[in-house]
Figure 1 (spheres, rainbow, N blue to C red):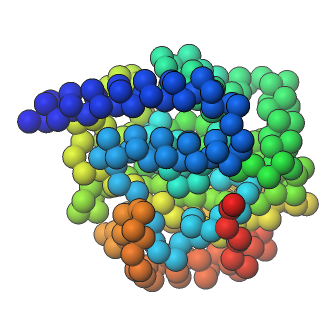
Figure 2: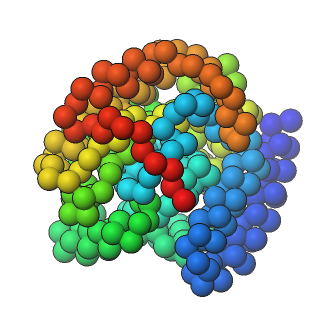
Figure 3: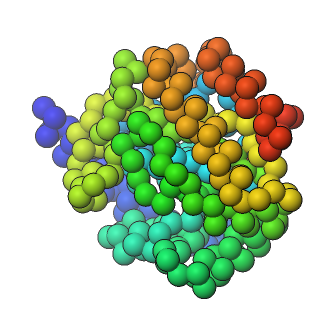
Length: 289
């Protein structure tokens, strides 16, 4: 049964990717609002094909993020589509992604910014583009770990890509990601780690039944006038604490788009504790248009 299910999903995904390629040809010509809607809808449909269900607490700030930089822990290539299904945005990715079959081309057409790791000049180029995007009111996303993990812990953050948020006086939104099954047990099925190939990772997701992903937006950070290393440390602390709490309890959230009313007392306690940080914004962020 499992191989048959995976093959069926693979066939549906192939058709969806073909549709994505057609859209990508004309995607840059649309208005920003239209591009956001297309990207969100296409990502949502892809997750539906893969039977991946997004869970967000009803009162979580993820529903009300204003433009800025979303900073998240990184587990899988799937993270990009999960985040885009909720808040469509531009991503900063390592240059290797550009060479991935089809996905690299699609990512480029959706204005993903690629960076050559270890090249200071390239980092300066990307940072300038990020500042321009932020000043233009766009939402961006980075994975400052610089690698993927199995989702049980959060690796140290690289601070360099937070500099554009400081230069543009933008907001940083630390977001925690956790994958689990229907019973709330941690799942490594989407983890793209170690010597795993993209095909291996894709087959793992295709073969998985009822995969859930829980997103938690911790308190936003005001980057203006801050030191980027301190920002990175604070964002890492918030995401690490959120991930730790998610692993310590069974999820009681509702899958999107229903977003049923629910309470997560442990996460609310986390927010209250983190709001004492001098870097954290205490007011609720406004919604993205």
